[in-house]
Image 1 (cartoon, rainbow, N blue to C red):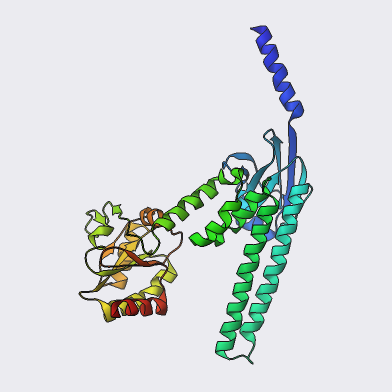
Image 2 (image 1 turned 90 degrees about the vertical axis):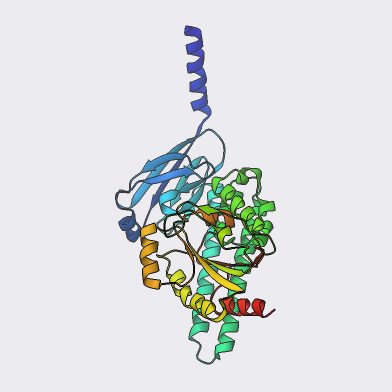
Length: 359
């Protein structure tokens, strides 16, 4: 038994001998310190979410120390929303977010700095266009649209190139996760996902995005609706299903909203116009309150006095089924329940509904 214990002790000493250490030191700006206060900063494994170290700010400074036994991996300072690579050595993070100290972290920093420089130029050009009194309204709109398209194409190209060039290291994960907030449609996802490495696909946030995109794919226009049930979803407390309204012989415009969502409340004026102009034997509206407290929804309904049916307290049931991560989300269903269109808003929504009903 003693020999076994000695052997285990020797192996433990050997593991520490070959383990490598990463030290991270950084500073934050005063306004960040005021936001963070006495809260802890956590250095997390981005793939698993595991907390590797924690600290509190001292005179706007923070530091982490991690023993690396599993090779390179992507990390995040969760409280600060900052990404870096677990790489042996000393890494420094300046108050402006500049990374330095190890090879991959400096490469990641160069990528972020180039993007930041491009974003500053884009914002400056957009501001100039908006303030240019020599342009007509149409010319200004055209120029801003062109700048937006250039901005989107450049960010997309930069992220794709970063992923290609770093397929076999954690920068593949960081580039994809950093860009992923802009992936809202299946065709954009399909452009990026083939370039994700095996390790990147293990990341929790990447798995969540993949699941959401698959739900978007299943509920894209042309597919039959997917039903869901909300316990106590009716205002009277009884259960409600989407199929109580959709697939019943009418076009149904379903508005997923919340009482706290300002754009959702602003959209209600267009929904009222749609209801006033089109409701009848062919068309109706249904509102489904998501991510909202039941009491807050009921209070908002008292204020709004919508004349169409309501499902309340749906929480994340609809967003899980229909793969959306933002509201308002307005979807038009055909009389047989086929999905006609998603992401409808404002005047464009009214025009689309009118065109379909006239057909």
